[in-house]
Amino acid sequence: MKHPNVWVIIVTLSLAAPVAGRKHQSHGSPATFDYYLLSLSWAPTYCAEHPTDKSSECTTGNHTAFVLHGLWPSTNQGKQPMSCGPASPVPARVVQHMLQYFPTKGLIQHEWAKHGTCSSFSSADYFGQVEKAFKSVHVPERYRTLTQKQQLKVSDIEQDFAQANSAPAGAFRVSCHAGALVGLDACLDKDLKFQACAKSATECPSSQVTLAPPK
Image (cartoon, rainbow, N blue to C red; front, side):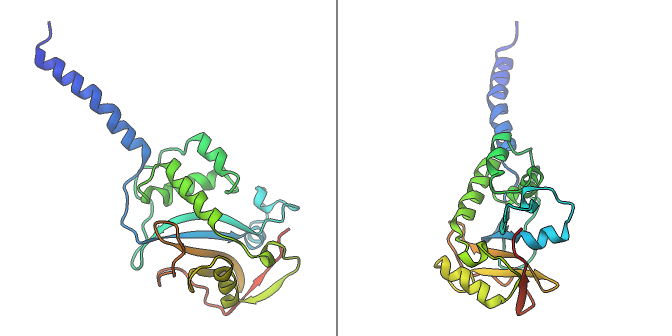
């Protein structure tokens, strides 16, 4: 016959173990951050640089313009938080749902491992935030229906998006490479409201960028 104290230990451990397991499964180690940066990629530039990419983003006829890249916990200054803890696989139901916004399953898992683990959310709740943030951005008509290559001022693109989204000045930042538009970043507070970007947000060094039209 077991000693009464042994039964107490067994019951205590059996109750505590599932709680610890759920906590480990749900999220990584939260990081201290000041705001979110919502990153959107300009598909025509990405696809031109990755000619073997067969994802929906680069499929001719889909006319893909801006594509969701990720939602990144960011700081006003200093090193940005990344890969803040163990990244369990994102549940299949979450992956399947988010494929309407992300071009590949691999990118979904990558974004969770690199950025989501710094948010203090479970993967399901983190991607809920990602979806909400992405849906909050209205892309002006001229960028969704571009039919020929154009060269635009960086300041004009940023202003177009600020006006279309009733956002404060400086809430959008253009990113570029070799004179071509690479993407657009939107800065959001922790309630996912637009705010002016911090100096830590990447800024295009060129005054103008070239936009290739979606395929």
